[in-house]
Length: 185
Image (cartoon, rainbow, N blue to C red; front, side, top):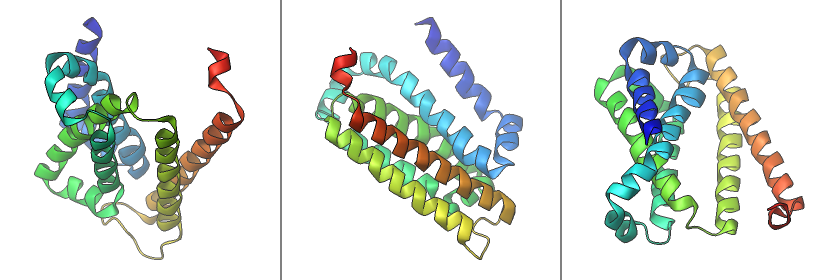
């Protein structure tokens, strides 16, 4: 229970204007670090919320599909260049980012992950691998600047970050395919 205070402290620290501005000043840190940290914060807060509101999670997300669908929609929205630009330009969109990533992506992911089948988990990883390849391709080879608040070199760096993450997911999928996890337990 003491660990939850550290998670809340990290959450408050990441929302401080100087910290948020620093992380948002570099495109790849904004997308792959700040946003990921907010999802992880929600992931770590989920057990407390599940204990406090068990009936809500049982009724709303009984088999894990609604939670995974909400997670996918929120993450797809935040991978769009336009949403990153709007988060930098409008305070209420940035506030939505601070709320949606932990509570509409991280918490449902934690609640749903244990409820869904292994094939659906692999399908989700494949979906995000394809999304990251597509977004990497878009950010690297787009002749136009996609985000008005960042330079082209930031955009290209983010694209390579997407492709590297997709390669890591492909390696994980290959590893999970050739390894029987039931024998390792």
